[in-house]
Length: 291
Ligand SMILES: NC(=O)C1=CN([C@@H]2O[C@H](COP(=O)(O)OP(=O)(O)OC[C@H]3O[C@@H](n4cnc5c(N)ncnc54)[C@H](OP(=O)(O)O)[C@@H]3O)[C@@H](O)[C@H]2O)C=CC1
Ligand SMILES: O=CC(=O)O
Image (cartoon, protein in one colour):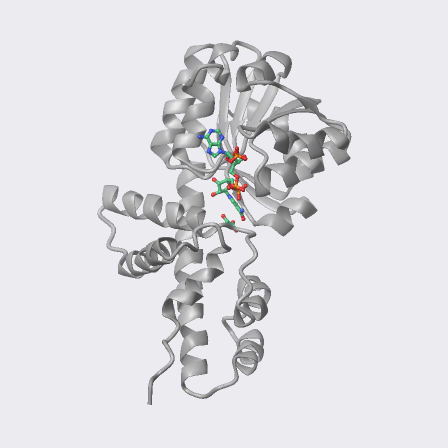
């Protein structure tokens, strides 16, 4: 299967490499074109523009940072709309809101193409290991056609019905994750400030009812102040913002998520946006008390 891939950031690079490793022919494009070089070393071809990629490939996948990037590769000059047509499919795996996804879907289908949104749950390591959870919605025939690619990138794919449902599911999941990360950070600060050993807290958490892979993976790095980015904080804040907007649309009160969003915003204003989202821990630290 020949697949186009737009967006070679933390996730896109790992996902495209997995496709190459499993024998897919992959044509890649990235806004910063030099990021394509490593993929070319692994056998990928380069498309000079999103339109050039779509011209060459029956199926094209997008993995872009946010709604504005997702819209840009579709609607801007040399964007994929210039070449999408009947017989071709676009699969947007970026985390965006349902409204963005619907705009893209309408434009693609108006040109005769097929559209699927397919955001993913799972971070850098699951992307590298082909262990993502794929939350697809849109054209069901396209879903069936691209399952071989999903099976390489993920451990489980869900088909959730009409366009928008994948985006919403992803935002709900990440709203919960971002809120949990803030509770965890506050717990680490409270343990430290009240004279407890943070590693012992991690050991206790690991053995109890709220043990989870995120605490286990992020905790040891956080207490070492290591925030090497797997999931950039700026993207987590974008997801909180979009989830809160979804809450607004549906009249759902979300005070916990709203507080978490404020903490992520504060972290961004402190220059932590490109660090891992666990760097929100820094915002809660108690300054050295003067005696
Ligand atoms: N990292 C993670 O753990 C996870 C991330 N996600 C979601 O996946 C998506 C990608 O995340 P991730 O790979 O971490 O992000 P990165 O920030 O590492 O990569 C973002 C990508 O988007 C491109 N991009 C940004 N702005 C534009 C633009 N205006 N036009 C064209 N391309 C643009 C970047 O290009 P350039 O290289 O030129 O900057 C880059 O390829 C996001 O929606 C994120 O929320 C979902 C699950 C997990
Ligand atoms: O979107 C981030 C993730 O870890 O999932």
